[in-house]
Length: 263
Ligand SMILES: C[S@@+](CC[C@H](N)C(=O)[O-])C[C@H]1O[C@@H](n2cnc3c(N)ncnc32)[C@H](O)[C@@H]1O
Image: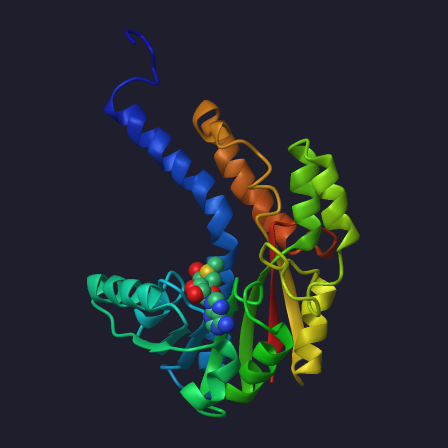
């Protein structure tokens, strides 16, 4: 548009950058958390290369970037298609990745007891047959001093999101099931958890629950259109997301929460 200061290739690049900030608001907290976990483990162990297992690592979205700096990363997942995609992704990035087909509950047989400095268990407890059995296996493959990084879908956020979408009966049904995910098998959908439930799973497996963060506290509640309509809002959302993620009152309100467990 003539005279429109937003028109032209420069404006498109600016919009793309702000769209990037909006997308970052959904991912950046998690990325920063993993970097700080890896950095703590390398300084604590005195080893630059860690042994990392991504249990239910899927297509390698978390595993491949961790393999980049030279850590020995193994993705364990029951899906051969996902493992093949993870290996393609690793090859494209020029990094080496071990891919093993299997179930999280069988980690000890697949990877060996006390073989890992770090285990990722991201968006997996939702699908396994038994979250308690998976967590017990994770605890056994961790070395003393090792850490598990758990990312889980929030049961509280699921209620809020249904209610905001006007699906009130569904919200009430989810509300009635709050607090039962760690013991009940999933009915027709993936499990969702409260932070207290996941902390309980960690403790029952002999691990010490550590710092928790809310992931996507607000990013899933605001329309993406903000990023284009008001570019400054994307940066402000990112700053808000960073601040809110560490506030305990917001942990269960976020779409997902992240919690560390220490052996
Ligand atoms: C939502 S995806 C998460 C993938 C990856 N962790 C991430 O965060 O991008 C769930 C993954 O769990 C895997 N999965 C399902 N059941 C599993 C089990 N019993 N043990 C290990 N992984 C399992 C699926 O194959 C899938 O790759």
